[in-house]
Length: 228
Image (spheres, rainbow, N blue to C red):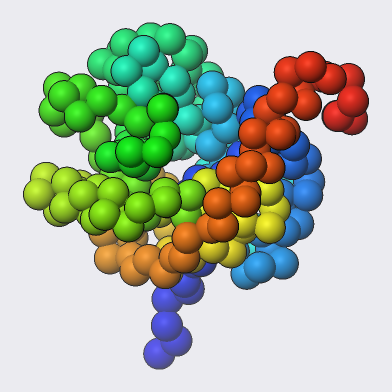
């Protein structure tokens, strides 16, 4: 009997539709395939345009989940399996409701990361517990291992699904995370598969943060210098 097909996944990455990333969707798709990924979630900041673009451009062997990393007044929340954009600036509760109303899943990106300014406040996490499906327990851009450990402990304490991502803003970061999981065909299958998945990840060099900062300033002050 042949084994069920497996996927190598990365559930956090960006394209040039994010203000701090310059990666064209086509380049993202090509690089993902080159490093061996077969399932990705494109999580651009406050837009699903990158996910839609990559999904359209991706070869058949690359499954693309359209996602969005949404900024709320209290920090960021990620929605998976989206077809409609969730506006930035809504309350955490309303952001979660907008994700759930379209059949999506709520994920908490890089919780407890003390270096970032976009982390969801700890007290807010407690208020949206009923909405949460996934906790990102490993993010390659999280500098301190203790912060990743706290995320894992939070997920285990509440029995949430455990996700991971490279948080790639440059194509060179793809391949820093591989989630090994069974193939799936719908959201329910995704949840069942992720429950049994294993995560293999490594931290990215802090130099990638510097590249992101430069990209953000270039796009802000020289918006026409980056060919779309």
